Length: 229
Image (cartoon, rainbow, N blue to C red):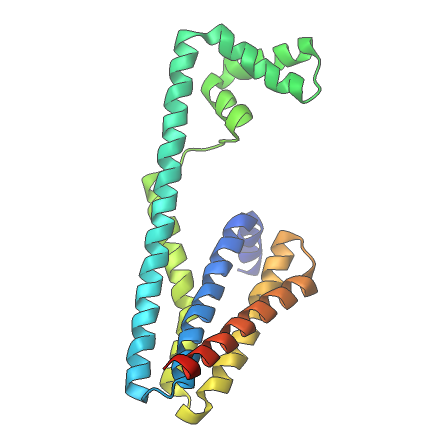
């Protein structure tokens, strides 16, 4: 079982990991900040709970919708580029072949070798070769994948937001501020460690940035709640 999980984790795109952990952190900071702002304003418990629940649900739906829209926009852009390249290959295959060879020449490959590589790639799958070498497009985005991206983003935000929400519901009312700050700090450290490992960045710098920015946001929310309300 462990080997299966390890193999799956190794195959996960680091960019996807970063995106989803960012959504988790957004949930922690957004809803935790809302809770601390209400605490600073000394809002009644039942009102604070209602606002935090609404913030959690609306925030998750907003992230879901935003990611879904981005994924479908990218899908449509890829399809439009592919359709245009397909037409060009039908109308002027020689020009497209020369253009593909030019891509390799620009990378320092000799003219003869660039031409040979372009011809070989085009013989196998001319459209895929054009899309990958000219636009960096390696695969098409399915509608299912777009919906999945949106759902994962919304669930990641919901997972992060559920931490301050549970604290609001379960922790004694006079201890909620410290509990929110503590769980936010621990969560930011954990997600930052994973981010640094997958992104090959400096772990302590990543942790430091996330914790400082996150806790500063929470502190500002508390002060604004105390000042504005």
